[in-house]
Image 1 (cartoon, rainbow, N blue to C red):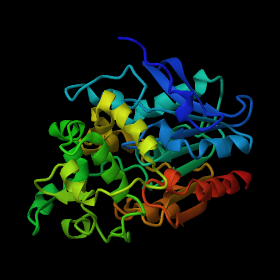
Image 2 (image 1 turned 45 degrees about the vertical axis):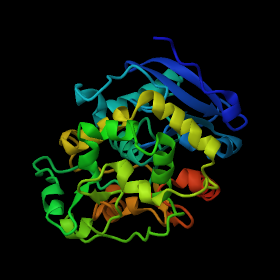
Image 3 (image 1 turned 30 degrees about the vertical axis):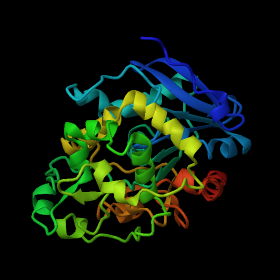
Image 4 (image 1 turned 90 degrees about the horizontal axis):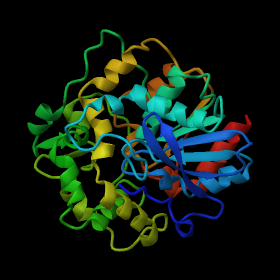
Length: 367
């Protein structure tokens, strides 16, 4: 198989470089970087369905502030290669502990003993939280975005069951996207979206953004079908719908100011080549109980490094797991220094409102 070249410079902001690191926990890791490699380091971890490119608006500002900024494509995503392919694989390599090892290995390969800030968005926030929980000696500050961390489960805790049987009994019947994403057909549903990959991804990004007027997030009272049914259809889906079918009615007529057609094309070309299964394997780790099992090893531990949490004011991700947002602030992160729900942003905070996010991050770093 011919090695993929780095991303073309003409699609990246000025000063942002694309290159590879070899032999990173079994991977050839593609990353974006900017700034002076001798300066304090910031590591940025993306979520689903994104790639390192999702940090493109934020990287130059952090580098201009005097930091060396690194954003890798995660295991199973983008131009990072070497992970197992397909559905019928051993999910151990996508375990949260192995993702922590991936992040720590990137840091070591760059000749660093630690990073000054680890920031994660969406599932990248889950990885970042685990990194700070397990290896605070490497990850000295933590910024979580769009996905609060409610702490490791107790050693003897009973895993949360699938809500799908109760959701299916509602009128209209529904299903939870975590469990849909964990099914065998989910990747093919999106790889071969009937409306075309570009239209599917545009609709998906749009509906989870502040541009869609239906996003009015608020706390949920419990992990119950009745409460979960309050979530939009991209989280709690129509029972018989695929994700492309669920978001199709919300396809915007024009490009977004924060995601132009040219920028969307970068995502489309990457996912057309890789497919979605690599990213979906992390959902399978969660729904199969592997994530809770691995984190329960650290039951009772807290995140004690300086921390912050940022999300869009229109992002349901803040509240989709009842109680996590509050637990993170009150118990789990013992040195939580800043929490902000940024106006004008939905789920894609680093793309929708990068200037506001940059201001918060720099203020946090300067404290």
